[in-house]
Length: 211
Image (tube, rainbow, N blue to C red):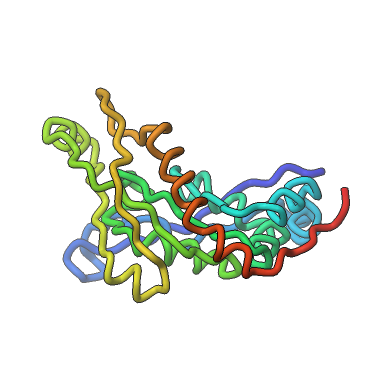
């Protein structure tokens, strides 16, 4: 198996709106896998059968938290993985990040993350978006702003217009950094599973290829 490299095309905008003005990076516009001349060979065969079997048997698929371009899309760009997620009966939830990442998702709001996934991996549905509703300490907001990171805005109406269900709860870690609390995220996932039992039973289960 040949290694895969995730490559991104950057979106750059002129500060003054004119071509001659200084430019700033607005974030990543597109992501793709790069394996040179063997691109199609590698992407067609990289989907691990055991991973596809796990997806087919899942009741809930959790995307994130993590960098949408560095962590999520390199997996979802693998065609077999994305197609299996699209076929399976599982409900797909995106755990929304807490802060933007300079040079990656500058000025992104929640719906931009969903659009980024749909633009690059259109086979993957996103049924729910899990949002933190606990306030981030003001001193942490100030510290992160010095590095160009800001709290992500939650445009719930735009999420609903995209067909996603926004769900809010406390996901914040009580520590010196802005992080998700894994226990709170875990409890939220268990709650989602409990509420989705009847919905999941009504969906046909896909069959993944044998290993």
